[in-house]
Image (cartoon, rainbow over all chains, first blue to last red; front, side, top):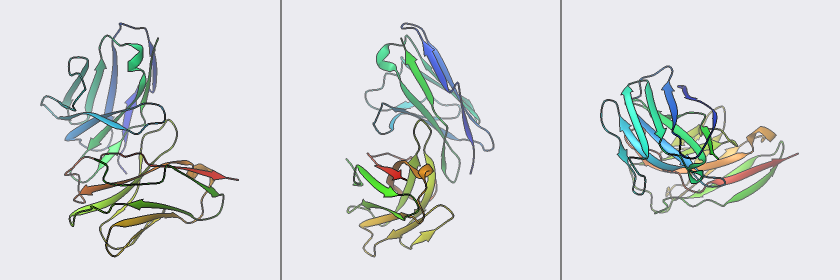
Length: 113
Length: 112
């Protein structure tokens, strides 16, 4: 299957700082990318959907000014958590979609201290 | 609204078949049944999908009832590495027209 990578795999940051997470589709062009968040022992919750070159569409309850998403190319999307707080600590998973299927990255564990 | 219902957890002995049930009684005629799994601290991994016929691949078999209101994922010879959360998802179309929405899943524990 197609490969999606995320960087970094783990990050620890201080409260109030911003963190950027990169998501790359390595062997396919992702016309759409999704960002999910997963709290411990919970299921994946969709945060936002982005199409290349367009503004992201955020799910209800997700603050667009706090979770900045950029999808500048067909192989790269970034999620920036701005002014992170401890409650933003979570497992963030991106997913890229081509014409056929949706493929998931390995996830990024964010810990805000 | 949850479109699928799965037991929250199951145990299976190593080497035995693991049968994971899923109820999707409100499934529409154009909705496919997808199965993904998520090993701890990793992203979801695609397993298999089907519309109405039973499907088999190198990972698992998918049995869909004739009325399509339920299905069973079968791991024929479970190993310790199959310990994961298994998600049953219904989605319109077999291509990527609609995103995947995850429910609670079944936490499968394979025991030696």
